[in-house]
Image 1 (cartoon, rainbow, N blue to C red):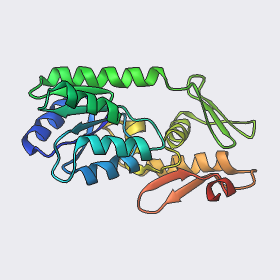
Image 2 (cartoon, helix red, strand yellow; image 1 turned 60 degrees about the vertical axis):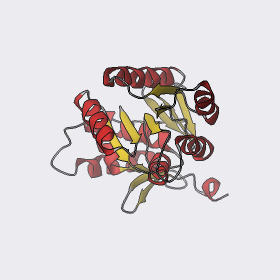
Image 3 (cartoon, one colour; image 1 turned 90 degrees about the horizontal axis):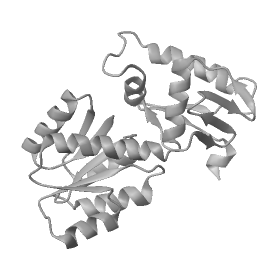
Length: 228
């Protein structure tokens, strides 16, 4: 599980990050609404945890912005010291999936994170489609223009991550984490697997779908359809 935490209280943020990290969760951290929104829209997360009170805006506006601008649905858990029903109503109306009032037990926070991610995965389509590309995440097979792509396990994982992130790029850090978790290889193995995927995905077709995004990672490109 990869989580984005948007919280301006440094002490609380450290406690949450360390606890979730000890329980196998990868946590990215932002102290402001602006930085948090940028991360949410440019990276791929399983969940966003956002505090209502932030120095440059509030969690309601962050949630609205993510819902309006993100190409994918990201579960959002809102944290706040305000427990009035009107505040909770505003949180859910802005697009939050769950609401946790401070102070809270860290174990409860972890359970809610796990529950939201499981619930979200239940509603994910088994077959994903991006332009001429279809990917069955259960059968672990992919086709381009109806042609079967003979992909190994790691190239398939890379392609699945790119499909989920589309039209946004997937960073190298995200791809490495999805494949190797917290134990990445010492060599640049990702580059080798990207080469394999590019060869299988693009060879013999009208245009290359796998594009390198300089200093970031990789993304899928639909050619003329992306330019329209």
